[in-house]
Length: 357
Image (tube, rainbow, N blue to C red; front, side):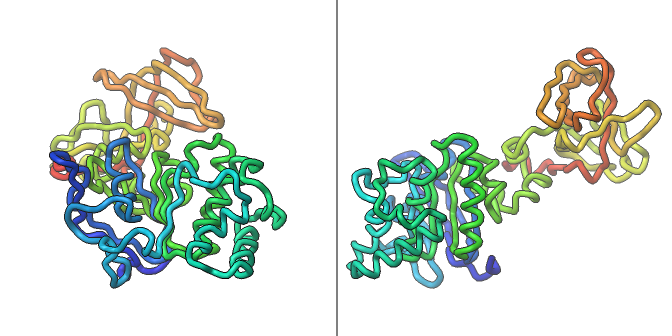
């Protein structure tokens, strides 16, 4: 991935209004050449509106979109060096695989022999047999259709590929396979991918960075590991997975026991302390941790190799705890549970930032 200080795509103060409703509020974003960026967010957050503007399907209300040194929001969609892979794939069902892949090249009046050579090359790239060139789309499986759609998108060598939830209609097993293939395809082609998805898991598996949207704004843009461990708001923390929240006031929180060193480190600080369930470990009586919690198990769930517990603290607050199955707690529902974690495993969302979110 190229240095983000020299972006291939720059979005400046992009705003989109529909009558009295503002779908995008002055969005700014830089995308590095060769980056795989995933844009995620709940329904209605503005993801699809943004990508439709970037590919030229909709017009922006204010702002600008630059591809390197060229402003492209004023360029018609069919003149932009970009391509879109839709959720519906939009393949021609009564044409062959080869005809589908060659379609954008035919529009650009590329000679037939050159078109076929490019189509066969792309079949190799997408790991489809060359004899699929003459196969009807209707005879292809769901995964094969996905690969054909990708081949067609790559046919005229676009600078950026946009994806609008292309895997959402597939079954779980095929989706997981194609996630890895897309990541591998990105690595092999070196293209810039911008990927819209509802699935946080997809985004974390494939992307270099994740941009989380909320109500027409970017809430946080960073690598998955950073967003998961250091969310900037409660919204982001919850969006990235299950999490425990504790209201910290001047270094104190109800139900939270601290070592003197931890109390000193948190002294005078206020905000929301976040702790992921898997960061907690069970503590034998007499053993301490930087942060310790004591309560009673009110529910337990088997999650394959892990056990998840809901525990009730004396304060009435519930916590979620996840441990490896072999480290599970005897006694089940009603049993006492004592857990803890290192201070480094917790993250404090400062009060001012969370209020702004």
